[in-house]
Image (cartoon, rainbow, N blue to C red; front, side):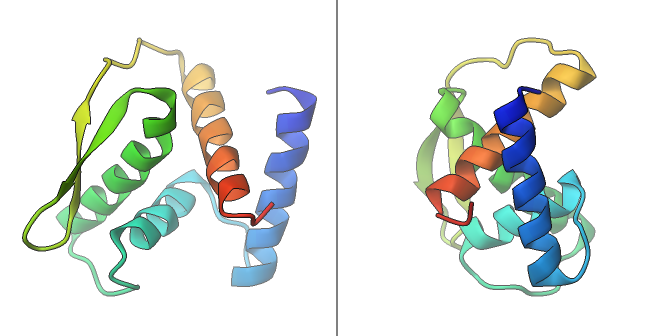
Length: 113
C-alpha cells in the first residue's frame, strides 16, 4: 500500500471508529457499503442475504474499475451488475490492496474522507 493510501485508510478507519464506536474490519465495511447501496436502510438480514449485501458492495466498489456494469434493480429493489471483465487472479495482498483502494475511493466520493 502506498503511503498516501495508508494515510487515507487510517483516516477512514478512525472516522468509522468515531461514528460506530469500534474500528471495523473489511467484511464489516463491505456490509455497511452494501446496506447503503441497497437503499433499504438497516434491517435484519438472513445469512444468504448478508452475502448478497456484501456482493452489492463489491460490485459497487469495482464498477469504477471497469469490472462490473450496473444492470438495474429487480422487482424487490436489489441492484444487479453485469460482469464486464474477469478480475485477474490476485494474491491475497493484491486483493486486499485493490479493495482498500476501492473503499477509499468510495468514501472520498461520498466526501467522508
